[in-house]
Amino acid sequence: MDWGAILLAAFGGGAVVELIRAIANRGKVKAESEKIAADCIKTLGDAYEARLLALNTQVTKLDAKVATLESKVDELNSELDTREVTIETLKRENADLTALVEKLSKDVKCRDKRIRELESQVKELTARLDAMNGNDGSTAE
Image (cartoon, rainbow, N blue to C red; front, side):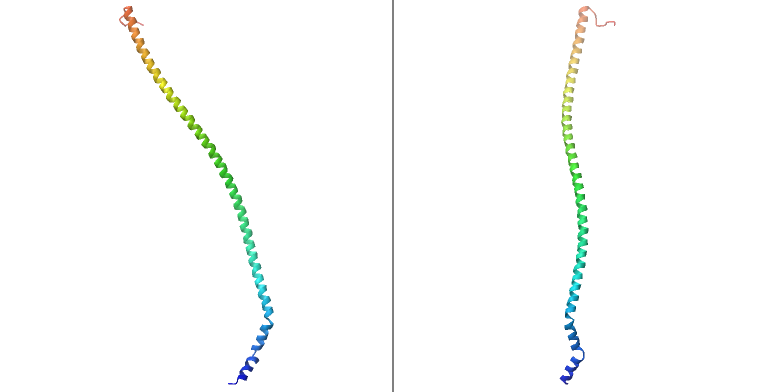
């Protein structure tokens, strides 16, 4: 085996040409790779910018919705407070009226008792009066 022939075949067969071409094109390849990297960065930047814009729009809509719901909650809390005050007022009025009904019921019972006592007295006095007048208790009316 002849080393000279092998070396001549290797250098003469285009390997050296390709090696020289690769060295010469190294700057071009680097520029192309940098351009591709810049294009990727721009594409990703544009995609992220579009996504960020969409998310900002969504956040703005959600902020408006939250503000509306917070306002509604405030209104409902105010209405609830008003209703609770009304309920407490009505409970006090109900207690007062219940006490008044009980007092009036006692008064009616006392009056009924007094009426029965007076009716009994009237009967007794009528009987005594009839006895004094000589009537036997049967009067023609």
